[in-house]
Length: 423
Image (cartoon, rainbow, N blue to C red):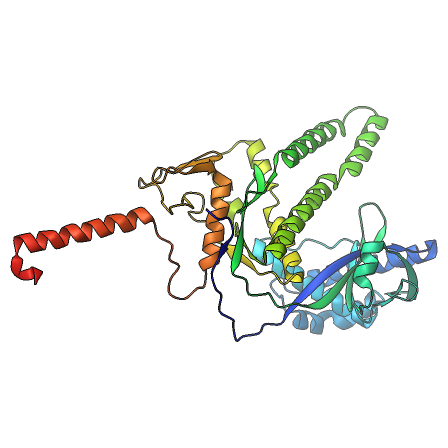
């Protein structure tokens, strides 16, 4: 059975222009005087956001309406420049929309970030500095940019960014670089990707990335955090202080390791798709956490499931593929783990499956092998035929054989019982 599938794909007459936005995080190197001005600006911006949130109707999410009610007040009260006041109103509106979707209210805003538009910051490539607006005037601040950041920012004219104070106490600028993404190429092949916890990703070619390592890392960090959090409120003053210091040092390590791992996997997947001139079909696991959390599980399994970063991996694959003109097709995971990719047969008894853990053994064609590899091939098959006119052509060979035999038997019965009908 070939692992990469191909059929002729007709050219489309519709051309879609897509925008790609990359966020480049660059460290700032402000002087002590500039640090004081940045701190004052972040505090004033947060106070303005809190004022807007407290003095407007909680259900009001239109930024223009919020701005018309509070713009002049916060501009004068908190000594903001015009664009800062506009950005504060827009942030409150955006946060309220997100909170409404989650069914929670917006509580308060911390002085840790501020949105910037083209009038609040300007990037200058000549000396790698930024001109940043503060409540005490404009400041030109040096950037500490590495080779990656310099390569991405070279020759660009960014118009939006976010000034952030990270947990390490340092200041960073999250610069958004927008560019026209190349049109996805029409491909006659599809590379299927099956996502999971035991194996993070398995391709329809059989390449896999084991998830044992990341699970062990997560379990280790969970044990260490639990131990330190238990000791932090107890013991001597020195013990409590050291526990808090270690917790701060560990903060973010697990997240950064997961992010590094997903970046490596996504680069390998996209690189392979480019070499094959293939599209990528990937499982759409939206809502899986809500469904699995309804099932009775112990605390450890719930933590492991909720820390599964499948969506991050999917977004990494999507934006890397977009830059390489590779089309990404999200596929519903329904029946992809139950169907045999070799004969397209599903277990005839409802509630039963040919899959047992990591093994798949088909009862019809006797194919057996890795269950995730079988699922990746099914995802590739569905991705290959999706949106194709004339039906998918996906049906079980056993069902077609039974229908053919039944039809022949019925025709023979009609001819035997009533010869006149056979004519």
